[in-house]
Each structure stands twice: as C-alpha cells, then as structure tokens.
Amino acid sequence: AQSVTQPDIHITVSEGASLELRCNYSYGATPYLFWYVQSPGQGLQLLLKYFSGDTLVQGIKGFEADFKRSHSSFNLRKPSVHWSDAAEYFCAVGVRAGKSTFGDGTTLTVKP
Amino acid sequence: EAGVTQFPSHSVIEKGQTVTLRCDPISGHDNLYWYRRVMGKEIKFLLHFVKESKQDESGMPNNRFLAERTGGTYSTLKVQPAELEDSGVYFCASSSRDRAFYGYTFGSGTRLTVV
Image 1 (tube, rainbow over the protein chains, first blue to last red):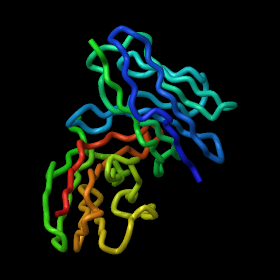
Image 2 (image 1 turned 180 degrees about the vertical axis):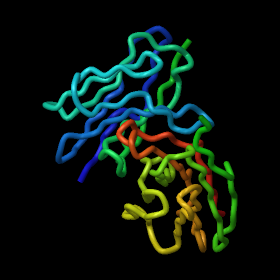
Image 3 (image 1 turned 90 degrees about the vertical axis):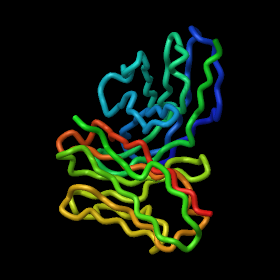
Image 4 (image 1 turned 90 degrees about the horizontal axis):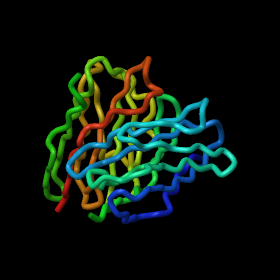
C-alpha cells in the first residue's frame, strides 16, 4: 500500500529565509510524486510533479523538489520565502491517472 | 480555461438529512475524482470516474454515499442520511486522459458541516 508522511505539522520561517518541507513516501513501484499548495479559501494547486528523469524538479512560484529514491523522500524547497507563501502544503504519491495518497499537510507561517 | 467548479461552497445540515454536492470539471476532462478531508487530517480518496464509469470507488466509506456522473460531464455526490462524522471538506478534481500524468486540477471544495 502506498503512504506519505509529512513529519512537520507546522513550520514557521522568516520572510526571505530558505524553506524545506519534508516528505517521505512508501510505494511499491516507481512513484508519481506531487506537491500541492492550498491557500486559505482556495483549492489545491499543483506546485510540481515528478515521474522520471532529472531528480531535481522545478515548479511554479520558485519552488523545487528533490527526489531521492534511496531515502524515499521528495522534499520541497524554496531559496527565499515570501509572505504570500504562507499556506498549507501537501505531498502526494500516486499512479498515473488513478488515485493519489496525500500526507497530512504542513502549514507554513511566514514571519515578517 | 475555466477551472473545476464545486457548489455549494458551504453546507450546514442536520444529522439524518440529505445533501448533494456538485462538481463541474474542466471541459473535456474525462477523469473526475472525489476526495475529502475530515477534521484537518489527510486528504482521502473517495472515487474516480472515467467519463461516466466508476473506475475506482474503493474509498467510498459506506452505502450512504452515492456518486454519479451522468453523461460524463458534471458529477454529484449525495450523502443520505448524513452523519456527524461526514463533516469535512469535499474536494473534486479532474484531469484529461492524455495529460493525466500531469496531476490534478482541484476545485475549491465544499465544506460540509453536519450538526
């Protein structure tokens, strides 16, 4: 069975600081991995995805993620956080067009 | 292109009543999914339509939940009768057949409160 763990429920960073959100997955085959963001009152928006190829994936809004098969991890990073990045972030693992399994989410607070 | 639309955005009903949630996917998207998030926990899969057919309904919690997608366009999710534990946010998502591996486009969700 597939599963996703986001170890950090809540993270606070200062504006301009770097960010790393952790994600560990369990999946029996090569996974499709995703990061989504949900801003208050909004739906989930896809930040980036990994299926194959280069293990460093670039996404929207300046985010990137690093796929490490040996660690079963897919951590999300951003070099410099903006106040508008405050939101809840979800890591997900799934099959191509089927269901995805989501983590519990990490809430990001940005201090001025 | 227009996004995934869900309504109502909020619904408050009493235990034992019936509620119907609606989802309009992006036009032309054959894949339609329902997910829900209960009590701030993880987002859980409910079911997956390909056009009007149920491809995977393994996440439907019990027979009080009925999902339909007549004509392969919009979908409804009916809860009858509603119980307190059904409270949560219900998300709909869609993806196209040929771009399915690009991930989902989600709607803003319906927040259901059963009192």
